Image (cartoon, rainbow, N blue to C red):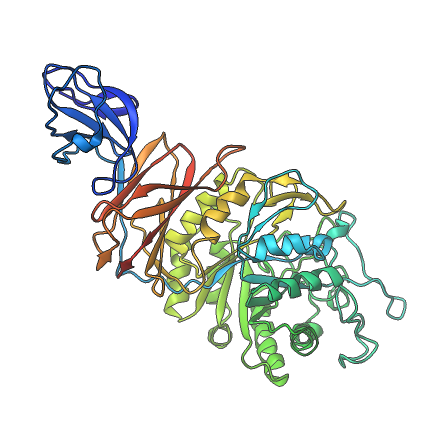
Amino acid sequence: MGPNIRDGVPWRPTSLGPCRPRRSYDILPGTWAGQFTLLEQNPSGPALFIRNGLGPFILASSISGYEPHRMFPLLCLTALLPFPLASADLTTTIAAKSNLGTWEGWGTSLAWWAQAFGTRDDLADIFFTLKTVPLSGVNTPSLPGLGFNIARYNAGACSSNSINGTRMVVSPKMIPSRKMQGFWIDWTSSDVASASWDWSVDVAQRAMLTKARDRGADVLELFSNSPMWWMCVNHNPSGADDGAKDNLQSWNQQQHAVYMAAVALQADRKWGVKFQSVDAFNEPSAGWWSGKTGTQEGCHFDVKTQAIVIGHLRDALDERGLKGVMVSASDESHYDQAIDAFNGVGEKARGQIARVNVHGYQYAGGKRDKLFEIVSKAGKKLWQSEYGEGDATGKDMVSNMFLDFRWLKPTAWVYWQVLDGGGWGLIDADNESKRIAGVNQKYFVLAQFARHIRPGMRMLDGGSDYTVAAYDAAAKKLVIVAVNWGNAQFLNFDLSKFGTPGVNGAVVKRWATQIGTSGTRYAEYGDTTLSGIKFWSKFEKNMVQTFEVSGVSL
């Protein structure tokens, strides 16, 4: 006879009649920790049933004077014999011996939001610490800090000056908050101490960069959306008139590299900021960088041009004593474009690239696994260096994150605009008016990952497409993040492949967030325990949960 459903959980009646739930009890130490519901058998026999999050377990008991419908103290139980009548709906086994790389961190690009909000300490604390931080001016509970350790700083391409009567051309659709001020304002001199350079601009973005550094962000990258406007064919930093054509003048290919290296050196000497890497491009193969319709800075680079600029950038960094600064490339929009660019730049340029950056705008499409294969074979690091979309619920984001961890296997993950409107921001904000409206659910979804999978951890194969795992060797801690897209069900986590899977009966801390427009927001629970080599938890539909298991060794 198949299991019946009672109190939302499968159970099997005996010939003596059905059980019925009576009351929740705390199981005393020495049995099973956590909340259980006592299911009382009818008075025809002595058997009782109890259940916890997994389902019912038969309980052999010896209770003198048993009376119908009367509740008995659990201290009366003389034998506790687990006999599972229902199991978790899904089970995944964590591959303890796998090694998908050392996690480098989480982060955000500072353009454009930091140009609007870069002087605010509360936002610096929210994004770059693990503190619980009140969000000023917004009626919302204090936020759990995301603990980002990566900040990507944008070297701007705009200036308002005239060079011998020539001025920057502005796209008619350019959004003002997306015009990032550049430092090399005319072509007269490459001497950074000359009047051709203005180091006083971009105050707010630089302020957030140093705030991030002061709060522990130690992986800093310099990148470019477009060369300085006067280096462009049409003097428009939003792109060429034909978005599929190069907009960097051929005689300025070296100058663009010089500009990037000069900003890196200035940061090192004057700002107290050491960039780990420099990327001269942003989605260079894309064909949408049009000076006629562009809303932001952008520039198309053919793959051949990318190779030339990469060589110039390596030389320019070396000439300035920045040999330890990596060249990263090419921040392509799509995984498939990144494959073509990496294969197409040639052997010399590939040798000069220390890390491949790619964006996540191909979303569920593209050959993530192929990109990982060719990059890892070449001995390069791989970052998901920019991701964003307009789904405020977090559903699209977490769906693509699991695809990234399963197939792309990056060692860092960077969100694009942490403050923005239209669902793009983790925090809903208007960069034009500099107003913050509230906190999107996707903020708490990302917290499930960023607050727990920390730099230095070893990334593991979670065993399924709904599980991500990481191991902290120093703390002997296993971190698991999992998502449930279907109806409410129990997920079971098998740790049998670990040398020590933790301590039997120990509490497994868990945190949960409901994916959607509302619901649970990064709530912490202590109701889950390790049962031998496994633990389990009930997931509501569209829920992401994080677990930390202590005392684990590989």
